[in-house]
Image (cartoon, rainbow over all chains, first blue to last red; front, top):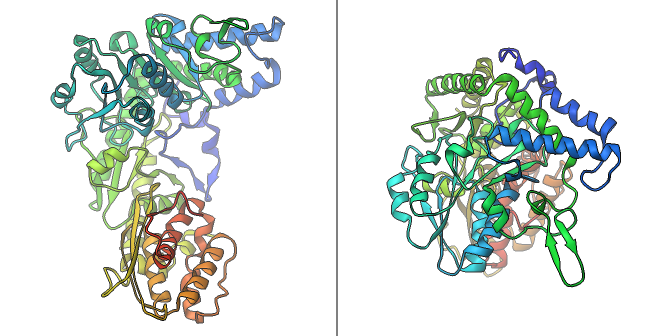
Length: 404
Length: 156
């Protein structure tokens, strides 16, 4: 599959936005979908629809098998050991909530500590905050330096005998900083502390190997990996899923139910109560195939090339300030423009059909640390080209003109 | 509706150099407003005399051109008005920003109405309406002597 004409596989790029060709630089928020994914969803509803797991008619058997194929697809995508270690949720947020709730229920008591970092998305902070409220747990934040990198020595110092879990992002959705998760897991392992990795931004843009990372939990969203909305993935080591209590109760997650006693289904069903986003999960396998066909190495090389080009071009615009300068960076670039509020930037760029995001990107802790109320963010996906970056820069120049 | 209409000269001009910035002398009412979605902040200072007339009205804040322009225009138009008049103008402004395009206030002249109407384009951009209304809700809170901080997520 040739990356140079990959845009043609995404129908949205044949549409005009405000009369202009769309320059989509908001993939860190959600990625656009290739035609193969859109067709698969349509096709499943048209020709194959059935719920999974319960019935024994042909359609149900087919849907159940296809659902399982996605689970195997995800297992291979992140190199998990067992397919039972893959749990489908509605999004990554729910995946993190699942662990915070069940792990917290069993293992967090008053005065216990949860170690996060200043880079975390609200989805990897708020679920832990609930344990602060309900269990009187203490939340600590490993600090970042002015480049936007986590200071590992400071993180080490924050680990105490009370630290029960470390939850850390793999890739910052503000600065694009790639966090040395493996190093953090190594540090944690020495003290027998489990680690949850928020992989929302890393899963679409990096090679993920949970066996190599040796993390206990890894969560990501399907819609950022060119898949449909409504699909989240929780990877958890088998022993945790067997040991922790269920999260949501209902059909499909039970083994035997009587008036006095209920037993639960084995994993992964234990964590997949009720009707799942069946069509979307099945469709998600098509997204994984799409990435496989491109090849993760090709994808990474392409996105690195575009990211470096973008950094180079943006640095040439005097009024632009790029936020953070991490050691290892992926295609997420947050910036400010002197004299123009990020919300005004986003609205004016939109007029040129350049779609970016403005705000705190669900990372208020980091913005506070950097003494910023908001930033503008351009994020790269597989379909972005150097021409897109040129358009971004032109639109920024236009913005400068309006506000000069 | 296009950008030109949204960012009319009036908005850009007020956004770049807002009027009535700072704390007005002898203020006896004030309130803070905050939009947690974009980080816009405003602090409105108000001097109401015994007859409940707005003698002084200023603000401090940070935010986008729309929120600064709205606050700036508000201070210009509401200063000198009575408590009742100020409430009517605010009501008309909120109506315009959400539904209509014109202002029917009995207490503003044509030029003043045009100034306010420059903000009417905002309603095409639902995410930005709160930028325009933050300072007005905050003014109202200051007038009412409501000490709670105004938060755009809990106001209309």
